Amino acid sequence: MRILIQECKKMLSVRLLLLLALFTVLFYNMFFELNLYPAGGQCTDSPYDMPYAAKLIRKYGSTLPVTEKGKIEKEVEDLKKQSTKLIREDSALIKAGISDFDTMMKERDRLTDYTDEQMSEKEQKEKEAIMDFTSFETEGEKIMFQIQYANSLLDDFALTDRPEVNLLRSGALYILQTDMSKMPVMILICYAVLLVAYHVRERIRGVMPLYSTTKTGREIYPIQYLGGFICCLIIGVLQLLAYTIVWYAKGMGIFWQCPAWETRGIECWIKGISFGQYMGIYEILVLLFCIAAMALIYGLARLAQGYITGVVLSIPGCVITGAAGSVIFEGLCSSFNMFSMKMWELYALTGCAVLAVLVVYFRLRWDEKRDIL
Image 1: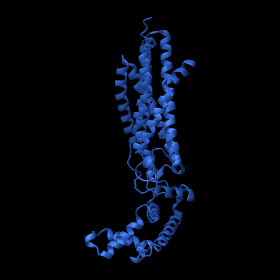
Image 2: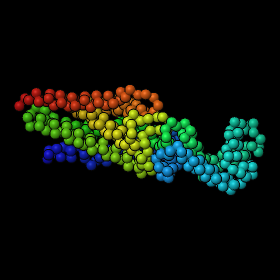
Image 3: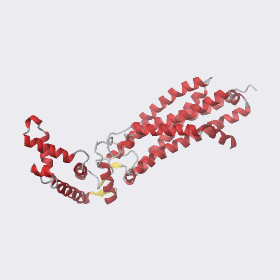
Image 4: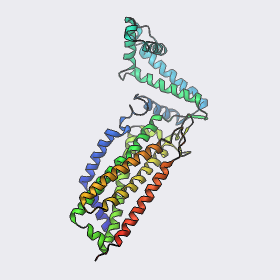
């Protein structure tokens, strides 16, 4: 146990952890859709749809029976009244002859079909007034998008063949699907940095031949593998935990209570679970894949005769396994749709785990036969 703790300490140096933390922040800001919430990425450029969906879930629960369609109709009416109140306080709209929400939207749709050359001066001013009211992050724009979302829910009530409508916003699914396809890349880069740095230090110290060719050294070698496994497990858990915390901090935790299906007949490949459980399962699968890939990368680096060769071998190993993980999880998360999936991704994950176990086993067995002392 003492040797295992020392090996873990060598891998998890403070400077290296700070470097990984900095890389994680940069990766979040450059690639993750979650960072864009509430606007952009989630099937809409509106920053209002998902917060409004969360508000409805807090108000009515995660689902609504089809017999309670009137609650959403009342939401639409209340929102239109709010919009109409704002319209009647807007002098430009009143001057253009617009006094309520429905009239404004009809005029907006009509004028959209015309170019500036086809419109009169009065119509151009009317269009400009409408655009000022419904754009530029105004309260009028916010209410307009909320009404659009509520109307889409009314369409769900009309089209669903289920006894209830799920208030889970499709944008939450999109964010999770996109980010889980990128998560293996981020975690594997962290693993590669962690293990390559450790591997280089061990090569420079010149102790690798002793580990592989002496009885005492071979007893340390499996401990190093175990230490690498534990350290990578810690890093992976921390990365996924951080993602979950950010998800919750942004107010998206409300969607966890919703069922993992969409109203219009779209079903998750795992039946009868909540969206929170759905998210947890994918995070566990990502972690298992990354641990298996780590074993393959580490075993590849151990085959090298020098630390430079080890680094050269580890980099493409990280790139290839990261790309494979991205493809696997993009396909697996996409199985939450109306297309039938053969679920080959699950077989790929299982095959990766089995291959990793075999590589570690035969690598250790090979070192046992290298006894020259």
